[in-house]
Length: 296
Image 1 (cartoon, rainbow, N blue to C red):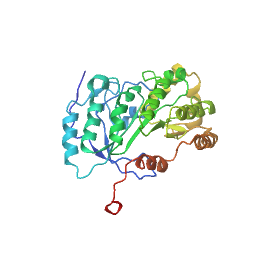
Image 2 (cartoon, helix red, strand yellow; image 1 turned 45 degrees about the horizontal axis):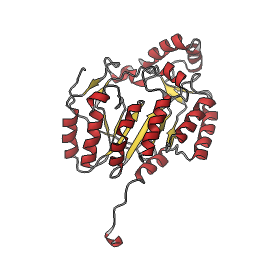
Image 3 (tube, rainbow, N blue to C red; image 1 turned 45 degrees about the vertical axis):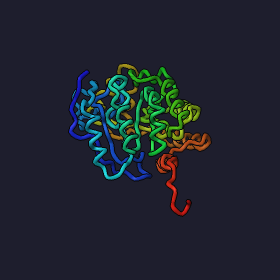
Image 4 (tube, rainbow, N blue to C red; image 1 turned 90 degrees about the vertical axis):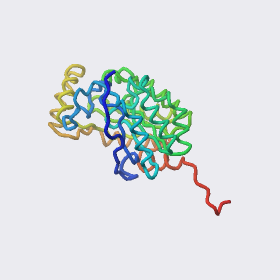
């Protein structure tokens, strides 16, 4: 196992309740990712991530986090998973994410994360304990309703079926959890069957929300990697991208308007939140209200 040293873990986050998933700080306990997703934006050259496919735990992460949490004047929500999955394969032995959650519980901080790994179900009971005192949000990325397609575009992750099962475990423990249905790959995953299938299975697994943007981004670094993968596994699709999008950064599905209408109607019908304001409110409203002196 190859380790790195961190100088700082917590980075302030500045987003409104309506703009994205609420958090006060962002944290990465690992560097790199081994998922092998053909579309990964983190491969973009602008991030300057060397040897991106090699996961490197930050060996001093928990000691550093202990000091940083103790120094904060007030608790808040810490989110994980922006650049490296907190439940990557090394986490099973390294236990950095579990250790961080235990520290958050001890210091009264909330926890949020995004993952493509069913390993998150291991910490369901711990996340439930954190959620009794502070906000918790578990976002499981699921882009495909079908395992076969999932393993073609995300070769090293837990199959979709295992992620839905992990979502069920979190939900059964009372954790506020849902699905990050992104990215949507034009000409590959942007079908009505796939989008509605993910939403339906999310609801069956106890999800509280599903978020979808109906497209993807491509820029230097990840564009070349993605196009090479398309040539190998999806013959003819690269040509469709070049004709439809050229070198555009944002690549919205040609079916995005119709998919959006079907998606929102399905979410409404199944009682799933899909707007950030509603998702964040749902997370915050789960917290116990403090008793006023006037209520005694």
